[in-house]
Amino acid sequence: MARYLILAASSAIGQCVWDSLRAAGHDVVTTARDASKIMADHLLDASDFDAVDTVLAQAGPFDGVVNCAGSLLLRSAHLTSRPQFDEVVTASLTTAFATVRAAGKHMSAGGSVVLISSAAALEGLANHEAIAAAKAGVIGLTLSAAATYASQNLRVNAVAPGLVETPLTSALLGSAPSRKISEAMHALGRIGRPEDVARLIVFLLDPANDWITGQVIGVDGGLSRVRPKVRV
Image (cartoon, rainbow, N blue to C red; front, side, top):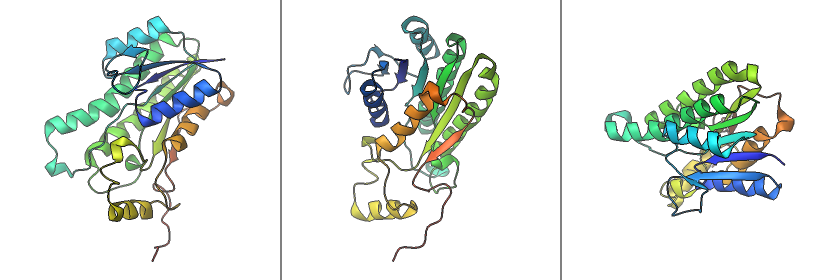
């Protein structure tokens, strides 16, 4: 049995990761920003360096940590305000950095850190400037941290989902025409499910897969790499 920490466990993907790890018999500690969605073990803002550091110091040791924090803003750059941009960067990149920072400090015996990037950081998508910038930062962070902490056997990887059906994307997928367009962008012809992403996260957390580090793996129905035939 391993011991894992899920930051922002109230997200749809975070809850799926929690379910999978618990079903496999692991000990799982969770955090959330508030208690309205889940009864988290610790209430904290995952962008707060000191708060994340304290959880890893006091609730560990952990074999793996995953940061599931994030946000979604589909708006062109010239229509994005500074507060909106700051919110996106804080939710996706600052939380990721706080996770790596604390893991590097407290997981001296090694383990696995999994971050969440996005297919939008791998493929140019219109009106994704803020989220693409933040998630591209997560990729750079993943690569650098993997190099830095390899000597202590701490692996750092990222998953890069396509469009996943969650409460966060419900407005985008709420109409039939919008859903059809979104599905057509993915070569496999469907929107992702939280469990699609969770399975990859659990794989990367598993100590059995301890020769994988510095990787950014798309779980996106082909969105970032494949151009399907036009469906008519």
